[in-house]
Image 1 (tube, one colour):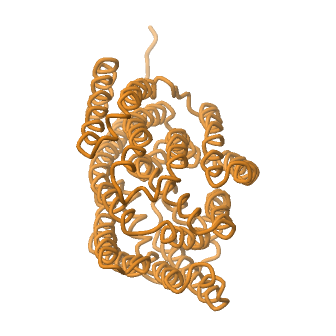
Image 2 (cartoon, rainbow, N blue to C red):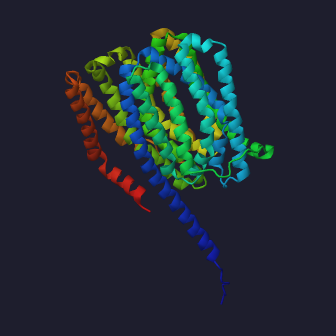
Image 3 (cartoon, rainbow, N blue to C red):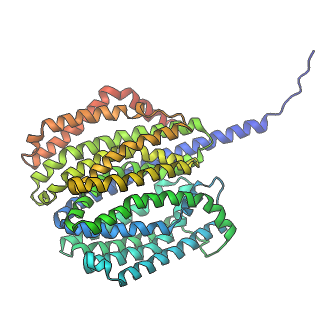
Amino acid sequence: MIQHTPVDTTDEVEELLTDAEEIANIKHRSVMGALSYFLRTAVLQIIGLVSALILSAFFSPEDFGIYGFVIQIIGLLIFFSDIGLAAALVQKKDEPNKSEYRVVFTLQWLLSWLIVGIIILLLLTGWVQAKVGGAGAWLLVSLAISFPLATLKTISSIKLERKLLFNKLVIPQIFEQIVFYGLLVYLAWHGFGVISYAYAIVARSIVGVIIMWSIEPWREIGLRWNTKVLKSLLSYGVKFQLNDFLARIKDQLFFLGLGIFLPLDQFGYIQWAKSWSQYPYNLTVQNVLAITFPTYSRLQSRTDLLKKAIEKSLFFISLAIFPILTAMSVFIWPLIQVVERYKQWEPAVVSFILFALSIGWAALSTPLVNTLNAIGQINKTLKLMSLWTMLTWIITPLLLWKVGFNGVAWSALIISFTSVLSIRMVKKYVPIEVFPQVKLALIGSVIMATLGLLGMQIWTQGLRMLVIGIISSGLIYLLSIALFGWRQLNKEVHSLLRK
């Protein structure tokens, strides 16, 4: 008779239980964080959208052009404020120690004041004032001040992200947006013009620091320089920041060039169309990205769970953003015809629709690029960003020369189709299926758009009919989802809520 030696599996069982508990905890915090984050930021986006409606009535295309021009300058300088160290701490598998936190804070603090110095030197040349006047210069100063203030929030924000406490992370943003838009609209209403942005930006920065520190105070704040720690973090951070640098060359630097080349009113049309079209993206994709990067980083060793997480993200993102983009594209023309003050934006309608359609692709590709970053495949995202940067600098000038300022939006739409490459790259590491996740949202959006276009003459008859058209289209979308995908939706929602 063969005797079997007993094997003590207690440690193995405990390890499995620990892994299961950790995975359940990650799922619970991610789902609850996503829901709370979405609800809170939905309020913020509604505030922003209402504010944009008001500001579109009180600000001229030139005012939007001034703000857009200054924002592009700041967008370039933001690159130098981080160099990817914050992302490196979030992506780090082990808990960062006090030394790592202090090294990151020290470098970011120094970089923030370097940016202030660069802006002061830029203003001394008089180049900014010549383009956007004194109001634009003060706007640039206010944004410069916001950099050192924002640095004070960095470590607290990283700690909340690592704990997956997204419901707390969004609270400072709520206060910041309420203060920013509240003061901005109040001052614009009272005729302060574009200088209103300067006061609102400073107020937002101060309030953000106060609220963040009341939620997650960093009691071990201090300055420290450690070359060894810095090098270990830069091994990931530099690649991450290079990716960001290419994005800024593609966007901020290119748009800054447009601001220099184009008259302020035409640049204002582009800025207005682009910023308006991005509201659905900020409401849906940006919310998910804030949660998925730390979550995917924690799941990078579990391909099966990561696959489910990515597919669920794509399903719910498409379900939310596709109908919003569709409604905005269909009803932007009736809105401008019905509201007298908005007719000044009629030349920007084509650009608005094209930007909105391109964002539909971005809604799918951005989470996938985020996935590559989270699993450490930053080289792949660098290749994608290099391609998109090159195409932007080649195609956009040609279309700009051919069709005028609308060529910028046409270029964005054409380039957006290359987002399919991000799907192929992610599939090499995680066997995701994309079309089944977006099919339902596509069907509902096509039906919704058909109804909207058929009733176009009715929606332009007055504000009441316009509101009826928007509500009817929304109901048609919901009905389409119920008819063609209720079982799938019910399954996805239950899988999220299941512990």
